[in-house]
Length: 167
Image (cartoon, rainbow, N blue to C red; front, side, top):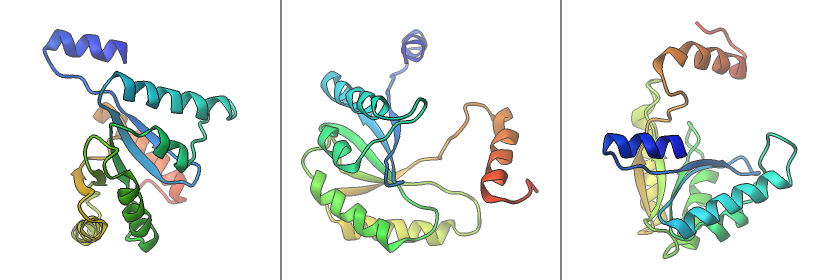
């Protein structure tokens, strides 16, 4: 974070710190603190999750995330396929966090170029609309690596995870 901040300052660019949170129930979020106090809550949450976990892991419960999320920008990462359980959990979380976040709860919408993007985007739009005024869509690109030359590694790890060939 320090190196990124210094490089951004030298380039005259704004710098925003964030984290990807994977909760113990398997749900995932993108979190961006908006000030020093909310940054402290984020780092405190991460420290708590790491201290009670085996080395290299971080166990965070949903209620803990909600407790620490004041003045964050927060985006829920949806599953790739439409899931009614996600939609209902998202709506409940949007109601619970209304007025506590710096912006509405976002639902992160990424294109995967798999032929199902239009269907997925319609489902995500419907999910956000049903959640009400405390929610909005956020376009993101689900970046996993900082440089294109890492794509073969990403392809290999995905093939292993899915139990298929890289081709």
